[in-house]
Length: 235
Ligand SMILES: [Fe+2]
Ligand SMILES: [Fe+2]
Image (cartoon, rainbow, N blue to C red):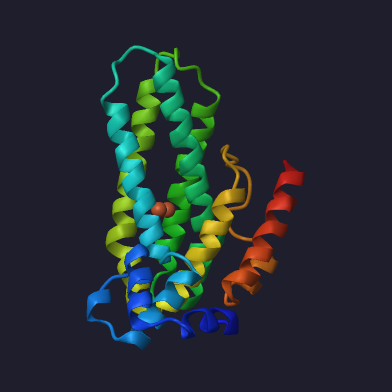
């Protein structure tokens, strides 16, 4: 869905200029590309990050945060509380963009993943219940560290399953263009997604979002904002 504006921008550029831009954007395989291939790769990059790459990068970030937690001393500390607060916020947002954009799209468009997605939603639900408890628990509480450890173990298991079962099928069956459209929509939603756990709120998108899923990322963006306003009003 390259727009006229986007084409015009790159149409005027030489191969060297396009190559320089591709270098700045870290486009894979750029040194093997001719002028038109460079232009096409830049147009694709403009649509947004690959949805799977974006989710994998967030998983890596969680592994780093979990490692930081494991490195902390047993005693309660402000540092521990801040780290767990960051974990809660980012895990809730990650779950939200998967539940509202990624899972519904792959359920519709990728063969044989329905059971995987259902299991993923249940795992999200279990973790969100724990995150909600943790959100209301003092860092001084006797089983604070134990609860964080159970969250970490659950999330590690869940991420491994997504990475070995779900993501490869998405990469295989969805085009790069589609994956980038979803990635762009998830990036937009990340900014407005809730940061506190709400385990009782729906883990599938409202009807207007499902209807909007096959549409372009920009249309999704509009739905995302509408959806976010609704959720904010709901509290
Ligand atoms: Fe997930
Ligand atoms: Fe994930």
